[in-house]
Amino acid sequence: IRVEGVDVSLALVLAGLARHYREYSDDPVLALAEQAAREASLGIWSGKDPAVGLPIVYRGNQESKVLHAPGCQYYNCSNCTVVLTSLVEALKAGFRPHTQCVNTPR
Image (cartoon, rainbow, N blue to C red):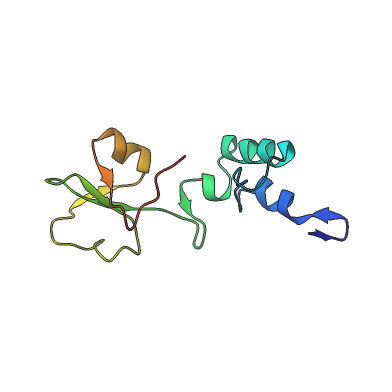
């Protein structure tokens, strides 16, 4: 889609507001745009919730090592007392994402 000569998909990917889905596109320009947004920690690559601009806080169960994201029905479980601000940090600490609420990075 173009608006006043601007490729909207490219603009969104460059701003870190969209991903380049390689399953549906082999466009090298979009691939480079996503790489640039990731390297600049823009938008969804910033580690912040894009809806409110705040860091995403994950909660984990120390015993089961299961990790929950905001919005998960188990996020406030009584055993989820470990607070983690990074999915990478959580994975390094031995936590595994709950299959229904956390998407692992690609």
